[in-house]
Image (tube, rainbow, N blue to C red; front, side, top):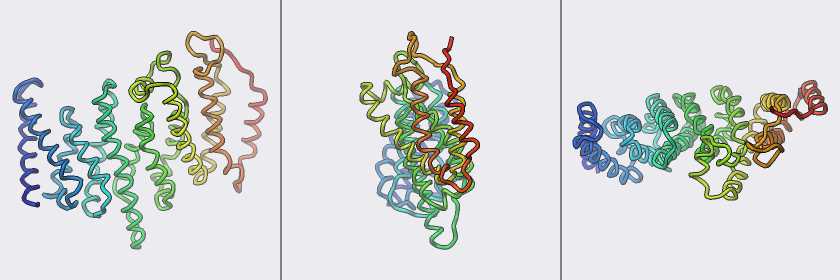
Length: 351
């Protein structure tokens, strides 16, 4: 098996070099480019067939040549889908092998995955682009579960070892959590849940540092998308790709938001004052804003931005505040001030 894989990796090296030379010296539609692209993709498809079941040391032969090459390939539009597929398979394997997986958590890996996701997200929304983003997202979430396993194992052995580049990893995870596609965002929530439920990770300064950003993302993602035909936006474009009807979306969104709110409750247990402060800031902002109507309407409807915001804020506060009020030093003065502002609140109309 080793000889066979070395041969296949060797062919990948030859075809990848051929592709780079053709790209440098030929036009995108030249025969040389088409041949190099076809050969490289065919080799990647062959590797994908082996990646799920061969031992991890076989995957990382030749000082991890495959992984290093895949990090380059995910930046190439013509090759990135197959490259991302292999990475997704590797990161979501159930077996564990400490050294190869440590190798995969390099800074180069984090930079490549985040850059690939940012590049694809900036491109026009289309099916091929979306498929690639889903594969990259599976890489990121799979990496999180592997990280957790290694971290817990090292702690059990008496020598806790924080995975390298954990901060960079959280940036990549957050990029998908805040993505305009609710499907991509939902894919990340199980990873956040695992982190919040694992003490050694939940207490890590790197994770604690991103909690305010995470909660800010929740305040955006917890707001339902209005009618896409009336409120065009990146969210609406993905809405049209993901759902056939408003009813289908509403069924999905109810579960999606409940998962987010469960995570807010976890954060409320970890950092109760922080969740209160985010809820406080959001409530003050909402109280200060004039009412915003659905385009073409003069009364509040189910798709009015103000109604959607108040709906999301209400559910957020139900999850963000309880532990704070039962804490050792509850923010009583701040709570009283908020209550006064709510009591004297009068709606204003956006002109």
